Length: 248
Image 1 (cartoon, rainbow, N blue to C red):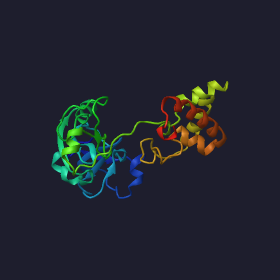
Image 2: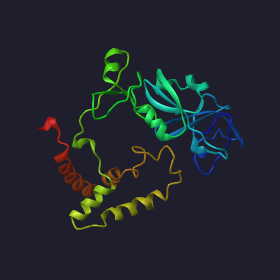
Image 3: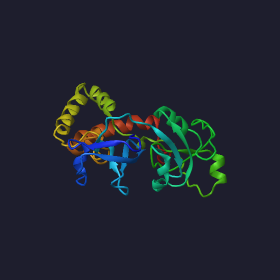
Protein backbone atom coordinates (compact mmCIF):
# COMPACT_ATOMS: atom_id res chain seq x y z
CA UNK A 1 0.00 0.00 0.00
CA UNK A 2 1.09 3.59 -0.58
CA UNK A 3 1.80 5.50 2.66
CA UNK A 4 -0.12 8.68 3.45
CA UNK A 5 1.56 11.70 1.89
CA UNK A 6 3.16 9.69 -0.91
CA UNK A 7 3.43 11.27 -4.34
CA UNK A 8 1.98 9.13 -7.13
CA UNK A 9 1.64 9.60 -10.87
CA UNK A 10 -1.22 8.34 -13.04
CA UNK A 11 -0.21 5.36 -15.18
CA UNK A 12 -2.11 6.00 -18.40
CA UNK A 13 -1.03 2.64 -19.84
CA UNK A 14 -2.81 0.73 -17.09
CA UNK A 15 -5.60 1.52 -14.63
CA UNK A 16 -5.61 5.32 -14.99
CA UNK A 17 -7.49 5.01 -18.29
CA UNK A 18 -10.59 4.23 -16.22
CA UNK A 19 -10.42 7.58 -14.40
CA UNK A 20 -10.71 10.59 -16.76
CA UNK A 21 -10.57 12.97 -13.78
CA UNK A 22 -6.87 12.17 -13.31
CA UNK A 23 -5.51 15.04 -15.39
CA UNK A 24 -2.57 16.16 -13.26
CA UNK A 25 0.93 14.69 -13.51
CA UNK A 26 1.18 14.03 -9.78
CA UNK A 27 -1.13 13.54 -6.79
CA UNK A 28 -0.73 13.26 -3.01
CA UNK A 29 -2.09 10.16 -1.28
CA UNK A 30 -4.49 10.77 1.63
CA UNK A 31 -4.60 7.09 2.65
CA UNK A 32 -4.85 3.60 1.17
CA UNK A 33 -6.72 0.48 2.23
CA UNK A 34 -6.80 -3.11 1.01
CA UNK A 35 -9.88 -5.28 0.53
CA UNK A 36 -9.83 -8.76 -0.96
CA UNK A 37 -7.06 -8.70 -3.57
CA UNK A 38 -7.29 -4.99 -4.41
CA UNK A 39 -5.63 -1.95 -2.90
CA UNK A 40 -7.65 1.27 -2.99
CA UNK A 41 -6.23 4.79 -2.91
CA UNK A 42 -7.84 8.01 -1.67
CA UNK A 43 -6.17 11.20 -2.94
CA UNK A 44 -6.01 14.61 -1.29
CA UNK A 45 -7.63 16.05 -4.42
CA UNK A 46 -10.56 13.57 -4.32
CA UNK A 47 -11.28 12.79 -0.64
CA UNK A 48 -14.69 11.25 -1.43
CA UNK A 49 -13.52 8.90 -4.21
CA UNK A 50 -11.48 5.68 -4.25
CA UNK A 51 -9.08 4.66 -7.02
CA UNK A 52 -7.59 1.26 -7.78
CA UNK A 53 -3.85 1.38 -7.01
CA UNK A 54 -3.10 0.03 -10.50
CA UNK A 55 -3.94 3.53 -11.77
CA UNK A 56 -0.70 4.90 -10.33
CA UNK A 57 3.05 4.64 -10.50
CA UNK A 58 4.91 5.00 -7.21
CA UNK A 59 8.68 5.14 -6.79
CA UNK A 60 8.85 4.98 -3.00
CA UNK A 61 8.65 2.07 -0.56
CA UNK A 62 5.20 0.60 0.00
CA UNK A 63 3.94 -0.19 3.47
CA UNK A 64 1.56 -2.67 5.12
CA UNK A 65 -0.10 -0.50 7.78
CA UNK A 66 -2.78 -1.74 10.18
CA UNK A 67 -4.87 -4.90 10.16
CA UNK A 68 -8.41 -4.07 11.26
CA UNK A 69 -11.10 -6.40 12.62
CA UNK A 70 -14.63 -5.18 12.09
CA UNK A 71 -18.21 -6.40 12.01
CA UNK A 72 -17.88 -6.43 8.23
CA UNK A 73 -14.73 -8.57 8.06
CA UNK A 74 -11.03 -7.82 8.03
CA UNK A 75 -9.05 -5.34 5.96
CA UNK A 76 -5.84 -3.30 5.94
CA UNK A 77 -5.47 0.47 6.09
CA UNK A 78 -2.30 2.52 5.77
CA UNK A 79 -3.18 5.22 8.29
CA UNK A 80 -5.42 4.89 11.38
CA UNK A 81 -6.13 8.61 11.27
CA UNK A 82 -8.57 7.89 8.44
CA UNK A 83 -10.15 4.77 9.91
CA UNK A 84 -13.51 6.50 10.31
CA UNK A 85 -13.59 7.15 6.55
CA UNK A 86 -13.91 3.46 5.81
CA UNK A 87 -17.32 3.11 7.46
CA UNK A 88 -18.62 0.51 5.02
CA UNK A 89 -16.86 -2.23 6.97
CA UNK A 90 -18.88 -1.72 10.12
CA UNK A 91 -18.02 -1.51 13.82
CA UNK A 92 -14.31 -1.85 14.56
CA UNK A 93 -13.42 -4.49 17.18
CA UNK A 94 -9.66 -4.09 17.11
CA UNK A 95 -6.55 -3.36 15.07
CA UNK A 96 -2.86 -4.14 15.03
CA UNK A 97 0.10 -2.73 13.15
CA UNK A 98 1.50 -5.39 10.83
CA UNK A 99 4.57 -5.62 8.64
CA UNK A 100 3.66 -8.59 6.41
CA UNK A 101 0.64 -10.38 4.98
CA UNK A 102 1.54 -13.42 7.09
CA UNK A 103 1.40 -11.36 10.26
CA UNK A 104 -1.96 -9.93 9.20
CA UNK A 105 -3.39 -13.37 8.53
CA UNK A 106 -2.22 -14.53 11.95
CA UNK A 107 -4.03 -11.62 13.56
CA UNK A 108 -7.19 -12.32 11.58
CA UNK A 109 -7.23 -15.99 12.64
CA UNK A 110 -8.24 -15.10 16.21
CA UNK A 111 -11.71 -14.20 17.47
CA UNK A 112 -12.63 -10.69 16.32
CA UNK A 113 -14.12 -9.83 19.72
CA UNK A 114 -11.96 -11.48 22.41
CA UNK A 115 -8.77 -12.36 20.44
CA UNK A 116 -9.02 -16.01 21.49
CA UNK A 117 -7.12 -18.34 19.13
CA UNK A 118 -9.58 -20.34 17.06
CA UNK A 119 -8.94 -23.91 16.01
CA UNK A 120 -10.73 -24.39 12.66
CA UNK A 121 -10.98 -28.13 13.41
CA UNK A 122 -12.24 -27.64 16.94
CA UNK A 123 -15.18 -25.65 18.31
CA UNK A 124 -17.96 -24.32 16.14
CA UNK A 125 -17.40 -20.67 15.29
CA UNK A 126 -19.07 -17.97 13.23
CA UNK A 127 -17.65 -15.76 10.51
CA UNK A 128 -18.28 -12.10 10.04
CA UNK A 129 -19.46 -11.28 6.54
CA UNK A 130 -16.55 -11.15 4.09
CA UNK A 131 -15.97 -7.47 3.61
CA UNK A 132 -12.26 -7.12 3.22
CA UNK A 133 -8.97 -8.96 3.27
CA UNK A 134 -10.36 -12.00 5.09
CA UNK A 135 -13.52 -13.30 6.74
CA UNK A 136 -12.94 -12.76 10.46
CA UNK A 137 -13.98 -15.57 12.86
CA UNK A 138 -15.93 -15.12 16.09
CA UNK A 139 -15.71 -17.81 18.79
CA UNK A 140 -18.87 -19.57 19.98
CA UNK A 141 -18.83 -17.77 23.35
CA UNK A 142 -18.77 -14.32 21.75
CA UNK A 143 -21.44 -15.34 19.25
CA UNK A 144 -23.75 -16.21 22.16
CA UNK A 145 -22.94 -13.23 24.38
CA UNK A 146 -23.07 -10.54 21.67
CA UNK A 147 -26.50 -10.71 19.99
CA UNK A 148 -25.78 -7.52 17.99
CA UNK A 149 -23.11 -9.42 16.03
CA UNK A 150 -24.56 -11.23 13.03
CA UNK A 151 -22.05 -13.93 12.02
CA UNK A 152 -22.80 -16.67 9.52
CA UNK A 153 -21.85 -20.30 10.01
CA UNK A 154 -20.12 -22.51 7.53
CA UNK A 155 -22.08 -25.50 6.29
CA UNK A 156 -20.39 -28.80 5.48
CA UNK A 157 -19.04 -28.72 1.94
CA UNK A 158 -20.89 -30.69 -0.71
CA UNK A 159 -19.96 -31.38 -4.31
CA UNK A 160 -22.02 -28.30 -5.31
CA UNK A 161 -19.40 -26.07 -3.67
CA UNK A 162 -16.56 -27.05 -6.03
CA UNK A 163 -15.68 -25.77 -9.47
CA UNK A 164 -13.72 -27.34 -12.31
CA UNK A 165 -10.13 -26.09 -12.37
CA UNK A 166 -7.22 -26.69 -14.72
CA UNK A 167 -5.99 -29.76 -12.82
CA UNK A 168 -9.43 -31.34 -13.02
CA UNK A 169 -9.65 -30.61 -16.75
CA UNK A 170 -6.24 -32.19 -17.25
CA UNK A 171 -7.33 -35.29 -15.30
CA UNK A 172 -10.51 -35.53 -17.36
CA UNK A 173 -8.48 -35.30 -20.56
CA UNK A 174 -6.40 -38.26 -19.45
CA UNK A 175 -9.53 -40.33 -18.75
CA UNK A 176 -10.71 -39.88 -22.36
CA UNK A 177 -7.22 -40.31 -23.83
CA UNK A 178 -6.76 -36.58 -24.56
CA UNK A 179 -3.86 -35.72 -22.20
CA UNK A 180 -3.31 -32.36 -23.90
CA UNK A 181 -6.90 -31.15 -23.47
CA UNK A 182 -6.14 -28.66 -20.69
CA UNK A 183 -3.22 -27.22 -22.70
CA UNK A 184 -5.46 -26.81 -25.75
CA UNK A 185 -8.06 -24.87 -23.77
CA UNK A 186 -5.38 -22.80 -22.03
CA UNK A 187 -3.95 -21.75 -25.40
CA UNK A 188 -7.41 -20.64 -26.52
CA UNK A 189 -7.92 -18.59 -23.36
CA UNK A 190 -4.47 -16.99 -23.62
CA UNK A 191 -5.12 -15.99 -27.22
CA UNK A 192 -8.35 -14.23 -26.26
CA UNK A 193 -6.94 -12.62 -23.12
CA UNK A 194 -3.97 -11.26 -25.07
CA UNK A 195 -6.40 -9.13 -27.06
CA UNK A 196 -7.76 -7.50 -23.90
CA UNK A 197 -6.57 -3.90 -23.53
CA UNK A 198 -7.07 -3.82 -19.77
CA UNK A 199 -4.38 -4.58 -17.20
CA UNK A 200 -4.28 -8.05 -15.65
CA UNK A 201 -5.10 -6.55 -12.25
CA UNK A 202 -8.01 -4.46 -13.56
CA UNK A 203 -11.20 -4.89 -11.48
CA UNK A 204 -12.90 -6.45 -14.50
CA UNK A 205 -10.27 -9.21 -14.52
CA UNK A 206 -12.02 -11.11 -11.77
CA UNK A 207 -14.28 -14.16 -11.38
CA UNK A 208 -17.78 -13.26 -12.48
CA UNK A 209 -16.59 -10.22 -14.42
CA UNK A 210 -14.33 -11.78 -17.04
CA UNK A 211 -15.64 -14.92 -18.84
CA UNK A 212 -12.05 -16.05 -19.45
CA UNK A 213 -10.93 -15.89 -15.81
CA UNK A 214 -12.32 -19.25 -14.69
CA UNK A 215 -11.92 -22.35 -16.85
CA UNK A 216 -15.44 -23.49 -15.91
CA UNK A 217 -16.98 -20.23 -17.18
CA UNK A 218 -14.97 -20.45 -20.38
CA UNK A 219 -15.96 -24.05 -21.09
CA UNK A 220 -19.64 -23.31 -20.45
CA UNK A 221 -19.55 -20.34 -22.82
CA UNK A 222 -17.31 -21.59 -25.65
CA UNK A 223 -17.56 -25.39 -25.42
CA UNK A 224 -20.98 -26.22 -23.93
CA UNK A 225 -21.01 -29.86 -25.06
CA UNK A 226 -17.54 -30.50 -23.65
CA UNK A 227 -18.51 -28.63 -20.49
CA UNK A 228 -21.56 -30.87 -19.99
CA UNK A 229 -19.36 -33.97 -20.26
CA UNK A 230 -16.68 -32.64 -17.92
CA UNK A 231 -19.25 -31.43 -15.41
CA UNK A 232 -20.98 -34.83 -15.32
CA UNK A 233 -17.63 -36.58 -14.72
CA UNK A 234 -16.55 -33.99 -12.15
CA UNK A 235 -19.77 -34.15 -10.12
CA UNK A 236 -19.66 -37.96 -10.01
CA UNK A 237 -16.09 -37.79 -8.73
CA UNK A 238 -16.74 -35.08 -6.10
CA UNK A 239 -20.01 -36.62 -4.91
CA UNK A 240 -18.05 -39.58 -3.54
CA UNK A 241 -16.03 -37.36 -1.21
CA UNK A 242 -18.55 -34.56 -0.61
CA UNK A 243 -22.10 -35.95 -0.81
CA UNK A 244 -25.13 -33.70 -0.36
CA UNK A 245 -27.07 -34.83 2.78
CA UNK A 246 -30.31 -33.53 1.22
CA UNK A 247 -29.95 -36.05 -1.59
CA UNK A 248 -29.46 -39.05 0.66
